[in-house]
Image (tube, rainbow, N blue to C red; front, top):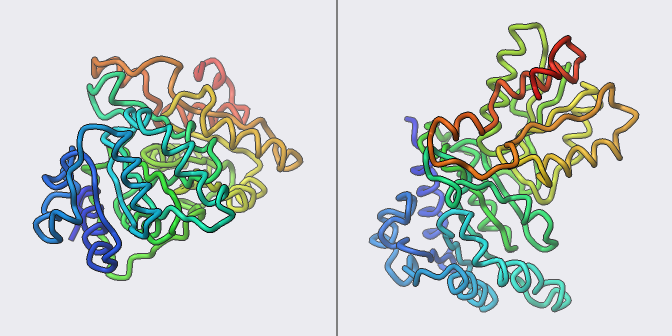
Length: 331
C-alpha cells in the first residue's frame, strides 16, 4: 500500500516516540497536527507532554529544544517554513552547533529541526525559499534533504538517533508524493548518498525535489542515447564526496541541480570540490542548474517560469557534452 510523504513522516515520528521516551515533539500547533498535518494524532496517542505546542516564536522554540537536549531529551522541533529559520539562527548557529566543540565533547545536543522548504504553488517570496546553503556553512550542524517518502522515513529515524543537531529539510512539493514503504525499510547512514539511477555518460547530482527532476531528465536523455547517472545526495552536510568521486571518475562529466538560487548555492560548493579534487577526471567543466537570482513570485505562472526543472538539466547535459546549440538554449 502506498502512503504520502506526510503519512510516512508521521509514521517515523510515531515509531520513534514509542521506541524512545526521550523523544519529544514541539513547535507551533504540533499537538494539532502542525502546519501540514505531519504530527496529526500524535498528541492524542503519546500525550501533550511529549507533543507540545509552543508560542509563535522560532527563537524560543529553538532555545527551549536546545536546553532540553542538553538535559538529556531528544527534541524534534518544527520550524514552520525554512524562511522562518532566520528567526532561530542565533541559537541554532551560535549555540546549538557549538556546544560539543566548546565543551570538549562533554555536552551533546541530540536535536532535530524539521522544516519545510521550496516553492509549491503561489506561496510567494516569504514562504518558498530554499536556504539550505546558509546552514552547510556551519560546523557542528548536520543538514539532511530527503527526496522520496521512503527516504524521508529512514533518514528522519536516523537523524533522531544520531545524537547531533540535525536540520531536516522537507520539500513542500513532495508532501503529496506517494510510495510504498517496505517492512524492512533501510535506515540510511547520515552522510551517505545513494545512486538513484546508474549511467555512464554524465553524472547528475541533486537532492530533495530536484532528484525527481534529475530522474525525469535522465529518462529524456536516454531517449537521445545519453546515459545519465543520478546521485541523490540525501545529506548536504557532511557531503559524500567518495560517491560523487566514483561516479564522476566513471562518467567524466557532471551537472549539479538544485532549486535554490545558483549564487552561493550547494551546487557551487560541489562544483568547486569536483574541480579541485577531480580535475584530471573531467572532460568538461562542471555545470550548475538552479533558480535565477530573484525572489519567488506569487503568481503561479511566474513561479513556474522561474524554477528550474528537467528541461534545464537536459540542456546543461547537452552543453557539457558539447552538443550544438545547447549553451545558447541554456542561457
